[in-house]
Image (cartoon, rainbow, N blue to C red):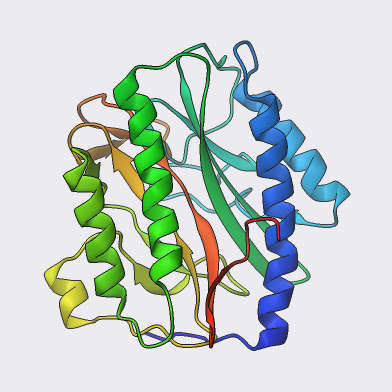
Length: 259
């Protein structure tokens, strides 16, 4: 792994990008309601990002295989969709959960975060799914500090999620972030033999995009026909939360919480 540590000045630059991310996510949270389309959410994210001097980080990211470049400013994933949903004329309905992932580049530095919004009335287990996923991210932020091994954080997140009866997605994980959206190291939300072999020691200057993805049923996921959208194999609902987090001598600072 080629981990690039960031200076306090570089972290502050990322913090500025993160503030735009939070501004956009808070605005979209206010907009999410029955009748709105995911493309309307996308258009507002792009408008607000540009109005604040940022560049939409996801738009134009090359696809894999036959999938073209990602066309949206946001990834917007509904219900059984886990991540990478493409904005469209799809209408949000009462009872949906809507996951929005959004990234910004500002003056060469990146911020990345995600939220899952509940629309109207949802079953109790779906509401709890969203709450548990949010709590898993908060747990990671609270545990991160210099000298801590990432495996201990991942183990705590996984243990909490599974104790609540949900499953942690394996195929997609968090990542380092800085002047590029995806940097080393990979940051799983679960413990594996590979993580045990190649554990990550948290040190000041390390900046991570931590993003638990939690399913109501099985952890298994599949890529849809559009080549981007990832959905659960059993059609169970999925929730996603993310912060860009900087490790400092005093602990972890979320750079995308609006502070």
